[in-house]
View 1: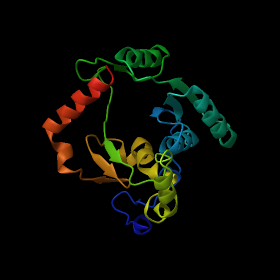
View 2: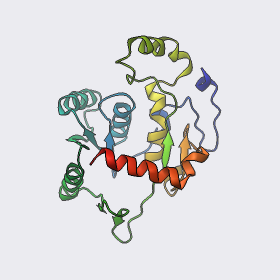
View 3: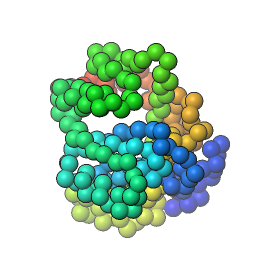
View 4: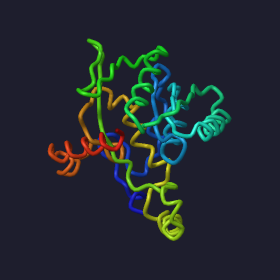
Length: 218
């Protein structure tokens, strides 16, 4: 219920804004977006709305069959959508490199050379921005394997959590809105610049998380 009373801040949007609302009237036809987790929940809505705004959306997925189904559903609603999908397997660094090289060799304007022993290197003159965000507490199917918790979330949760359309709003806002065009290195919540938890600015914890993540995909 808290999101019903969300107040707008500098952006003019709030916790109750939807992805369609925050991208209304924006033309993204000159952009390409890679959306992971695009076969369910927030990912599907993000892919759908970006495609609606003309963005060439590439879904990085683990299940190609589900991705095909999602693509067909979106195309029924948006026949002009530019939508593709590619299998994303993060079980090894080799597959990550293959995923990246496939995009680069396909001629997409990524302009990114991936080096996994050092930070990203980009071509001279290419503008790169990097921001992080929190979508908020959102009702998705993440608890689908826990019957009791899933039932509770789908009943009581509807009164306190965002729906998927609201949950995808901040992602789509940061990806498309002109207000964010030259902003980099910031944290967003409810479609506005926010202040992250102090632990998120702890370099020691960041290194531990990075090392832990690398170990998971070795």
